[in-house]
Image (cartoon, rainbow, N blue to C red; front, side, top):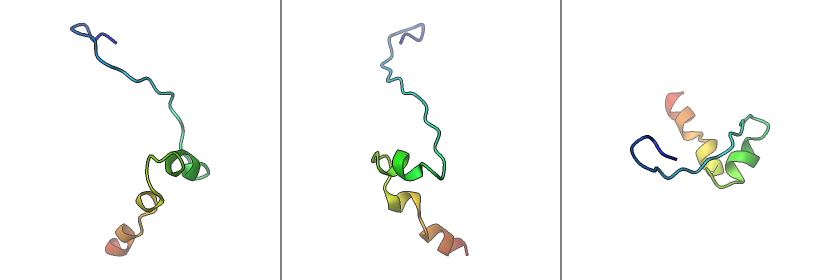
Length: 48
């Protein structure tokens, strides 16, 4: 993609809607985040 000054490397991705129903499949199973990163309970414990 050219920004008017130079060619900029681009990776085009199709957007994906993430919901409670598909969170595990989209975020965890893909390796984007671990289950521990997504369902962090340590934050709730510190705030509560």
